[in-house]
Length: 230
Image 1 (tube, rainbow, N blue to C red):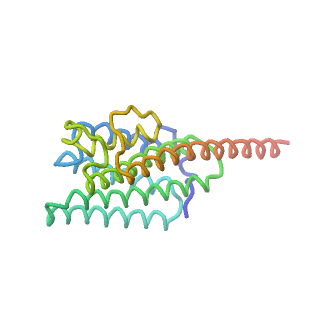
Image 2 (tube, rainbow, N blue to C red):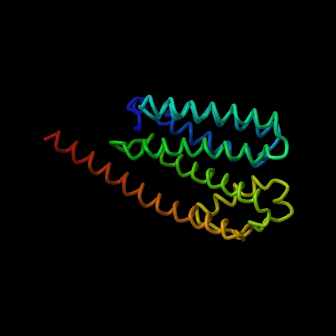
Image 3 (cartoon, one colour):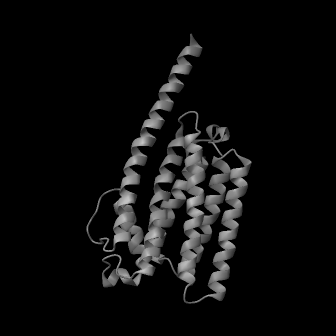
């Protein structure tokens, strides 16, 4: 579907789209800790994040189809979020979370596809792989939020966590992704436990597979470079 664009190799590492995406994702995570996932501040965060996702995918991928599909999905998601928040009150947060989940999964698929088709390792490849890891944590966080919305007893959230459950579950997602496991939040329901196990397992498999992929690409590139110099 897509592959890392050769144009990114001409840019300094700090100006590459993958690095910008990684910085934006980490910035949104930090800012969301203070603003939460509801209210005017949350809408601003979502708007900035959607713009960064569009720009990053358009810069990282070479495939015009991937760029067009990503743009369409994000636009539909943004329009859907605005519509839901205008006309729905009780279930607006749930529908909004569903749309965010779909958008993030779409971008995640495009980035993984680009990594799979990458022909060599450079700074942009490393930052793209790091962005995928962060996006995986955010996707799982949205899944946890939906599980918690359907079953308020799915996780052992404290009274303080219940004030901003989205922020608490985002924290839980990243502690699960990195297998830190502070123990402040635990999965209670079967679905919550299953998703938590899948996230931890996927994270470990991703790190092992991506590391092996990047190392093999670098070895192959070095071998071709050495042969061409002879």
